[in-house]
Image: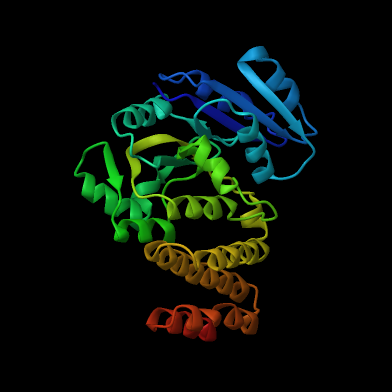
Length: 309
């Protein structure tokens, strides 16, 4: 049986970009089983735009509750056996679903799939590709040796992927049953909620399919909340990862190792943000826990770098 993909698009005040996202799903060479737009309490024309598509788009409306709740709401009404996600300001490459669907039919042991994607600015300028910019991605590109597909399954590959993953939410394809089993995306976190879910998914997986070509576009916004409020964003990142560290006690060792490395990096990024604002003592306190959580030269070097400012 061919896999049926439910594509879930959470949208909040996305009137300017929602049509582009929807059209990229409609243009798929392997048609989506359904397109679900979850309006997260928008105050602009988002709902009207979604309704213009009639029966092509299934519209779900909720009070403003955040992207995790919106994605989970879409999954709750989905009728496909596989879930795919797309933020309203991003878009899919034309073969995004096809490349995953073909692998699913050829390798039934795959637990989930991910892949490469492009970074573009708001003027559609290409800024780079994800796999080339992350150590885990470069590792798998080398393993693929020019082939468009590779399987991630070794402990080294999985630890590197958890520590600094290359596949964003819009490149993720996951069985709906597994998504439900894991409880979906965590609520109550504003940053890094995608990493939280992805890591829990990896912890339950042994064979992960990777497409070594662009599956879509992630738009970099110069005025994003992360850039406008870097300290608050990095604090929230650490808070989310603290919860993941707690859960990681029951994860396989490679996943625990990856979580520890990611937390170390998050604490360092918070320290850098604090240092840039002149809060040197707070910066030192931000990275000090790494000495206990991941003792070694790198953690010590991070502390020393905060001392030097």
